[in-house]
Structure formats: structure tokens, C-alpha cells
Length: 131
Picture 1 (cartoon, rainbow, N blue to C red):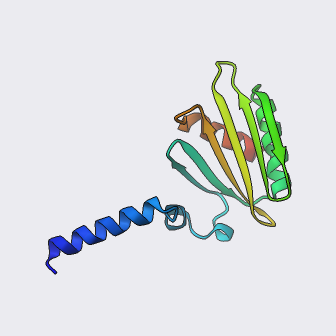
Picture 2: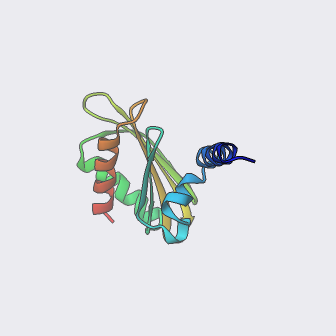
């Protein structure tokens, strides 16, 4: 195999790995050890936080209220939660919480159809302030 073939195989392998959902592990580490890791992918902000699901849920509801958004739906069980809201200018917000461990929760935030990174990060910061 020549160097061009080797480079092509490496690039294809990296592309497959990054599209398989393993990119977060490469960028941020394993879930339990990555509290505070933030990744913005395909219009959605993902953050692994060192907080229980209940604590993250309470902080999320408080942050959305602080920001003056209108909650349109919310649901929670023992391992996950979802909150949907709408901004004053009509953008839809979807926040999903998934329990990774007793004190580790993944928070996913999408603003609008295609995502809004700056608004997503602002929401995350407001949630973190409520921990």
C-alpha cells in the first residue's frame, strides 16, 4: 500500500468514527469523567454535567423561567426528562436530559429547526447557574 492509499483509508476511517457517535468520547472523554464537557453538533448543544437528573431538571425549569420563555410541554421519568419551550420571538427550544450515572446528566439543547449555538450556550449557562 502506498502513502496515498494509507492516507485515504485513515481519512475514511476517521470520518466513519466521527459520524458514528464516538466523536463526543474522542473530544470529551468518557461520560463519568467528563462532567462539564460541551460539544455542539448538527445544531444541537450537548453537555455532560456533574449533577443528578433531578438537580439538572430543577435547574432547567428555573433557567427557562428566568429567561421568560413559555413552557409548552414537559415530561420526566427516572432516567430522562424533556422540556419544550418557546421564546418571545417564536423560536422553539427543546431540552433533553439523560441520566448517565447517579451524579452525571447529559443535557441536549436545540433552539429552532437548525439550531442556534449562541442561544443554546446562553441557556446552558443559565442552567449551570441554577445548580
